[in-house]
Image (cartoon, rainbow, N blue to C red):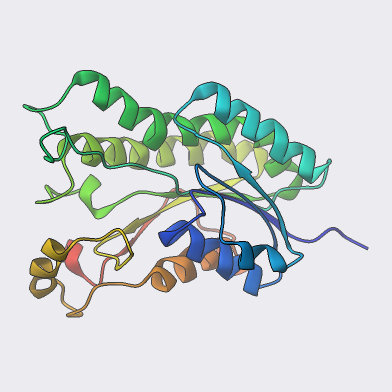
Length: 245
């Protein structure tokens, strides 16, 4: 009997990452996740949630350890999908978003370590398993990586722009392994982390609502399906049309 389809999802303890993990579970995939926090206990009831590994991917040593543990869980089985979702958008001590003129340069380095370098490290670390599975990578970017966003902050926005560029380069290089690489760029998605100030952006959204985590999770899942077997190097905007303006 062939092994179940396996997916690795980062930043899966809450929000978009959690919804992505739950969608793959609902479709019968074996799910391996990581986050800095544990997942809710009720999530572990599903036997297909194979492993949740507590890791801080902003720390290179922790990221390397996560890759080793996840590959051990796979135990030689192919990996069909890697979802690079973990990310941060920090604020300065004065509660401002980290920008060009405020906050420390070291803070910028921390943002890029998680939002940009961690996806690169994981792509390398799981390349062999993805090659065996003729799998795919989906990087979670952002509408803020393409347009100046009033609340995102320059450090976050430029790290996501860099991840969009990395997606393109990954797609070109990893095609020789039979691995597809795409990105999903969410717009305003309603999660427990979103603040009231984002409501002011709804009039700018043609569909006149914020997105849901299920909207993003469904797009990510479909990109990993056979229906998208000839799609690589693309970035899909899940923004309700906000990116049109």
